[in-house]
Length: 107
Image 1: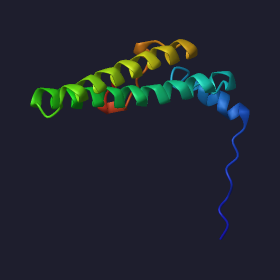
Image 2: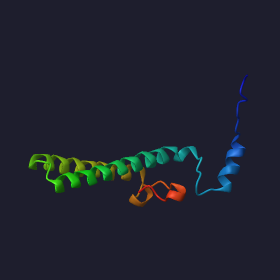
Image 3: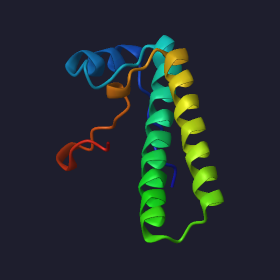
Image 4: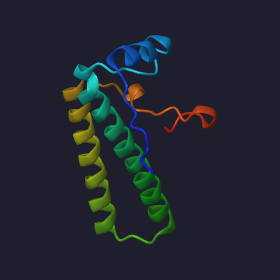
């Protein structure tokens, strides 16, 4: 049994966009920025998790001084690279987030 194919017209997409413009942006010019925002939000989430885990390990005394130095340097480099990428894509810290509906914001 063949499944019917779904065809969405540009007009239909525009109607959806106009119904909820703050949630949906189908402008092809903004796709790159939207994708960058999503990726950088996920990288920021992972960076924060790594930072918290590193603090727990430092506080727990399970890292050598050399390991602490390496982790600190790595986290600083990641933060620097994130800043560069946000500037390239014209994003601010407060824009890096995902609303999870009833669960609230990701970050």
